[in-house]
Length: 63
Picture 1 (cartoon, one colour):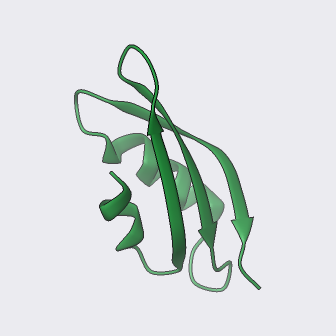
Picture 2 (picture 1 turned 30 degrees about the vertical axis):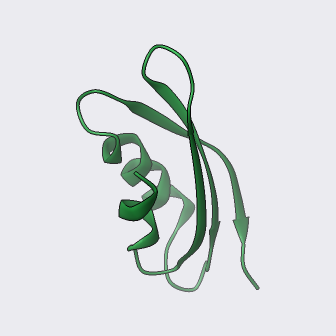
């Protein structure tokens, strides 16, 4: 999960934590010049595959 997001253009750092019942949380540090928060949320929700569902709980812009 973290590796998928870290490979995206504009992502500086990712911290993902799997909680219970295959649900997880993601914190992302990103460059707003290279990607959007909307795109990161969409990618995070699908990056866990069929077995896990992740939600972006924190996103900070790297400036």
